[in-house]
Amino acid sequence: MNFITLEPEQFRKFASKYPDKSFYQTPEIANLRAENGWTPYYFGVEENGKIKAASLVVAKPTFLGKSIYYVPGGPLIDYEDESLTTFFFKNLKNYAKSHNGYILHIEPYYEKIERDRDGEPKEKGFNREKASQNLRKLGFTPLAQSDEPKYSFALELKDQTADKIFADMKRNTRNHIRKAEKMGVKIRELKREELNIFKQITESTSARRNFTDKPLSYYEKMYDLFHPRGEVKFIMAGVSEDALSRSIIADGAITERPSPVTTGARERSEKEVSLIPLSVAMFITYGDEVIYLFSGSDEKYMKDYNAQYLIQWHMIKYALKNGFKRYNFYGIQGLPDKSSKDYGIYDFKKGFTSTETGRVIELLGAHELPINQPFYYLHQLLSKIKHH
Image 1 (tube, rainbow, N blue to C red):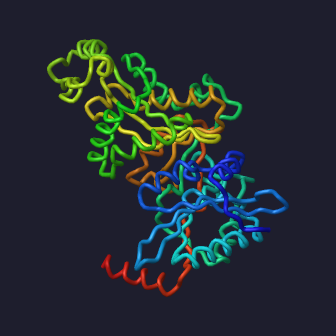
Image 2: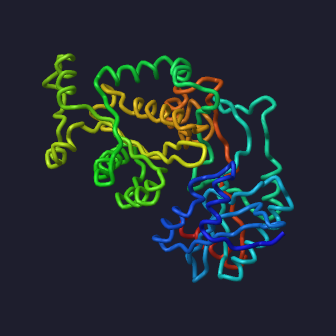
């Protein structure tokens, strides 16, 4: 086996055929990281003229001139193959150590335990504990926190039809979709120059729900990177002013409803305000899956219009029509726990699935490996002091 460097398009070609791949392992994400001070590298393992494993790795000086080496969503490797993982990581560690690295941080997009819709291990399902054991043997330590979710929820689309998926949804989920359609909610894709609409709603949602929103520049950059390849969609659900007015009259609550046209909307062109924004969502369409990444809803209209439900249904049908194998609702906060404050997020996603199609995805999770131990442990010590 040989440890080699790859050109971006060589890496893309390998990744395009790899089964367990993440959009974080793309040249587009490398470009995004480079704009934030990271240096991207592409490494691979070659044997008999064939690439057996590969990875995008990014590096950045973070501590006394020493660099963190970070592998988002990777590497793309069979973690149960001990000889392959040992060869790859030992060579990567040596490279990083000789180039001022002090820590290697990885977040594999590699499923550990096969679980059902309720988060329970499937009977006769796979358990890739050997993958975790191989990482531990190499000196990796699992981390409690990660940049990417360890647990996600997904709808499997193989052998499914839109009619069957709709019929198998929870009754409340079907009712919310039907209500949104009856209320005149429409779906359309936002253009780049309209991403300020997306940002306005996600920003207000983040303030309400106490999470950190991305800056507008991030959404614009993701559009620039992935839209030319057809791998990102910014979706808006909205209603016309006429439809909104009719629903207000029907409810007999004209004086109680807030005005649908905000100051910002009045300043936009007539074409742009043809739909009053109710809800937005961002999707990555990469590899075999559609990934629901970010979203937000105007709090004034959430209960009346259920627009986010219609966005999900629209994109599920898009995924089916375009041959995707999985609709990934993305992160949930740990395994399902009814006592958790975030249980509602899981329950919302679960409502679109049946016991046959829905499942919790548990990944290996984030791991880190000391490269330069004196610097690594000094950094750990100073971090503990800082947080006390």
